[in-house]
Length: 313
Image 1: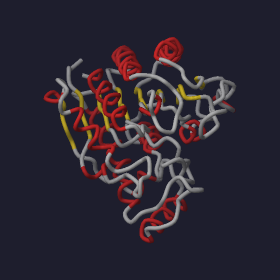
Image 2: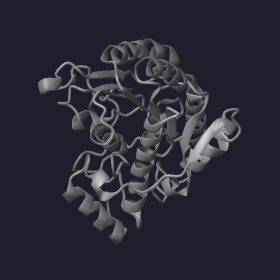
Image 3: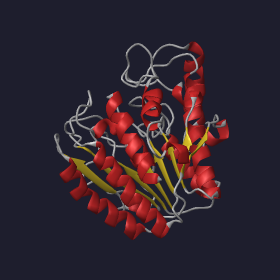
Image 4: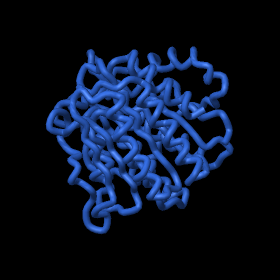
């Protein structure tokens, strides 16, 4: 496999950030890029800008009525899109659509070849549901990408691996009854952290009963605990023989994040990316798309995401 990767970055996705001291501020993008530019892998990256997702693409996952609500809130530029975590601001629709479009651009490029791996930092907005915003997430680019992989690119078996401190409830419940979506989610135990979901007993429903993997981790969990638990993720993904692997690599699971309680280092993220890269090479022609996700300590997210990109190359 080629020793390079695609990077989607630029002002289009950097604009997705909330004002007035919000944890998900617009400075996260550049904090990451400043770190990545000092990495030995920087010259080997093929860099591209994001594009805005079309309305039709957003409707792969989201309801038309919800998209209309986001457009109206974006034009008004005030209020909240959920119960109080996700504020509207002027242009929030365009910024959120660019995150989705950036993820779709990365997906299209890795499927077209010749480079089968990609990273996009401001993405992995895994809390948004099909008809609502949640937890700093307006549109769920992960969910749109899963649907696009099927509808546009003809894939069936997709693996979604999520190591963000928060459970990826928007993806999990969006595909809870889909047996072809392999969803493996390692997160801080929902008894201690938003959104309070992702219990081990949640393994899918209907035709998908028993096909999902939730691994809640105790507060204070370390790299050693992460790597032991990740062996279960590897075995699960390997058994599902995916045609594409998506990694949501939220850096809020590192020690020192201001709103979570896990204690990983960036070595956990490097390990996850390296192991999934090997599985992607084995099962799906190397096709691995990593999305930044959460992370509210800027040093942590810069180091963790840089280690992920280094692992992809």
